[in-house]
Amino acid sequence: MSTSLCWHCPVCTVCNKVSGSVCSCGSLDPSLLTPSLPLYPPPPLRVAFTAARTANFAPGNLDQPVVFDQLLCNHGDAYDPRLGRFTCPAAGTYVFLFHALKLAVNVPLYVNLMMNQEVAVSAYANDGAPDHETASNHSLLRLARGDAVWLRLHRGAIYGSSWKYSTFSGFLLYQD
Image (cartoon, rainbow, N blue to C red; front, side):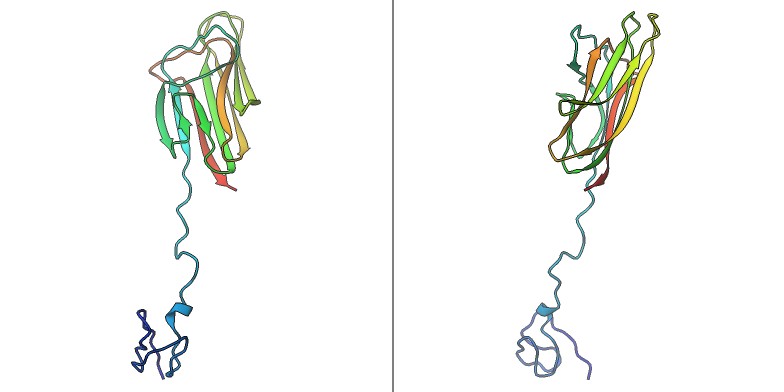
């Protein structure tokens, strides 16, 4: 005997009788077959940003946060362009990259990638001459929700240009 299930029970589509969990014709109540989990998994979290400096940054004080004045992309809205900080939206492993072009002055450039208040990695540029040099580095960081990642200018000055030589980027590699 072939059975067919009625998705608007309690009437069985085989025998047209009111059914409980098993109808007298042997067909099952479809509510017992409905999965308790969603049919589709939630979409993956997308987090990525790139910001650039288009104006020189020469604060004159040590250990200043670098705020990038042009946001090129901010998928997931985790980067705050007013503060220059990325705030982790979900636990996982993230990739961060930065490039800072030294202003053409006789002062070395020291840049720190900060995770909360700790130095994750640093970059340095100086050949002793007043010319442009690039300080760059990258890091994979395992972050918890709410962790902050940002760039700190320890010493020196960053060159800014519409050509976007000085940039800060990050993206989620995989979620925990």
